[in-house]
Amino acid sequence: MKKYLRSTGYSFCQLGVITVSTALALSMEAFADDLASKATNPIGDMIQVQMQYQHSPDVWNLDGHSDAAIVQPVVPVDLPFEWMPKMITRTTVPYVTTPKLPGVGSVDGLGDTVVLAFGLPELGLKGQMFGFGPALGLDTASEDETGSGRWSAGPAAVYINLQTKGMMWGLMSYGLWDYAGDDDREHVAQINIQPVLNKFFANGWYLGLQDVPWTFDDNTNKWNIPIGPRAGKVVHFGSQAVNIFGGAYYNAEDTDGTGKWTYKLSFSFLFPEKTVSPP
Image (cartoon, rainbow, N blue to C red; front, side):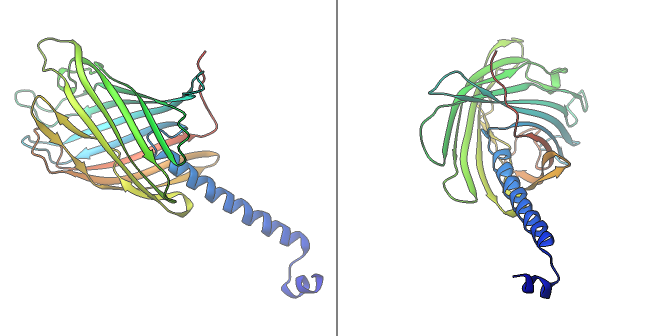
């Protein structure tokens, strides 16, 4: 062995450093791959602070463009129930710029906040996850044009399948129907369906569908169906893990005020070691 090391120019110490460095690199790659899976899972057990920006240069039946800056914290909460040990909350807070509205023009302001809470029952299904709970629409809009003016609620459910190595597929859905708010505003009655499909690669890379729900509005009897890809990667800035993705999606439905093509960029700060417990 010593003769071999002399012939290659390595000492035992150098060989040990190389071995440790290789093991650490492989460990970091596996860690990034695991984070990518959790970060793209709607009910992944990890605290996230997502910051997203989306731009629609052209919208249906209105002039101008639309923009949205979105903050979306995802917080797992430990529950004191053996049959349901965990709940995942997803809160979406948008700041929007509308296209040019008749008689008003373009308007900037906070939009309505949507809160989803999924309890995760312990079903003993290997590679499968199921969650259910409430969906809440909060009247937090700062301008009439940027929100519904109504408070709404409904059920939410999600199914995620991880049985195929390197793949994730599933479906998240929630409904919102108004129960209070400005009686002069249009009622809220919508169903939201978000297909989930992701393919994972080495070093934290992934490719999948956009994380934007398809929406059916019962008032207009119209769908908003955004379809398009996203590509992303989990990276580290020092000790801070960040999920970065970008992509585009197209809405073929002629729905007033919705973007035709929309471009999206997202940065999510990941905190895999942290958890929240009830008081």
